[in-house]
Amino acid sequence: VFASVVQAPEDPILGVTVAYNKDQSPVKLNLGVGAYRTEEGKPLVLNVVRKAEQMLVNDHSRVKEYLPITGLADFNKLSAKLIFGANSPAIQENRVTTVQCLSGTGSLRVGAEFLARHYHEKTIYIPQPTWGNHPKVFTLAGLSVKTYRYYNPSTRGLDFSGLLEDLGNAPSGAIVLLHACAHNPTGVDPTSDQWEQIRQLMRSKELLPFFDSAYQGFASGNLDADAESIRMFVADGGECLAAQSYAKNMGLYGERVGAFSIVCKTADVATRVESQLKLVIRPMYSNPPIHGASIVATILKDGDMYTEWSVELKAMADRIISMRQQLYDALCARGTPGDWSHIIKQIGMFTFTGLNTSQVAFMTKEYHIYMTSDGRISMAGLSSRTVPHLADAIHAAVTS
Ligand code: LMR
Image (tube, rainbow, N blue to C red; front, side):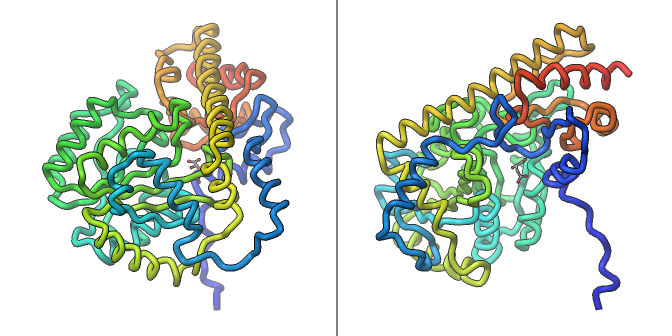
């Protein structure tokens, strides 16, 4: 009965790892998926995470019962505090509902399903370009996806006037997806002044902000600074949605830990919204897994562990920033044609190199370097040892 099922293509991001794994070359390099690697090219489990896990294992009062549909209560409270700020009036006024979800993607999906059922406007505007999974998540949830201009290839920076024009032309009430910081894939973020202008425009048009926060702490190394955009929107008292992931900032990729929050106008609305979120979650996966959320809650509620986490997080962010400088210097040293200053200007895990599809294919074929076909490279996958190989490949790709 399934004979007519056609072979599906690999995922544009996760499929890069599939291709990389098949390559036998000793010099192969995976700069596709956004996953942090050490200078030795190895995945990193943070010390503070190991410590939290040890504490959990040693605590024999812990059991493996089902969590509530909304997840671990402590985790939800602490996640809201982390993203909206410890003194957020919205939290103090009980206007925020937060539910534990399956990392960033699961949080976005729960939010999208809720909006499709309970929000009057079904169109969501996403930046052009954006993370490849965004349009799929929103379309499958039943929303209609449109794009707004975001990136200007000629300046390799923000197309701010295009962004304002497109959001200005969006129908009143439309949902707008915003990357809280470290925009994926471009590494280009609005400045604080630009965020303020975006906020004013969106509020004046009653556009609904839906933030994707996958890199809090990874952009600048500072957890508060990287949440500034969201906090601006929450500070004005309006509604706001946020999807949080702990994949990158706590290195909990495979634990699938995330949170979805809706900031409402009143506590009463927030209670009713939460009751409906439960109806979204229950038929999808019933209730979320306990282990990863317990790790996060253990770290966030202990002052010393929180500090230890911030220090380890800053070290990851700093290593990425130093990779940017090293790659830029290596290209300058080779006299590679073109202006590569965007490598040091862009923010977060990725550099949007400007390399085209055929240049990417050339680098994979000749240099065994794996990256997404849009020219995005994960700076977190680079090390001082591999920078020269990448610089040689880029040089050859743009000069051949
Ligand atoms: C990425 O963009 O590489 C990450 O967010 C991982 C993913 O799931 O795509």
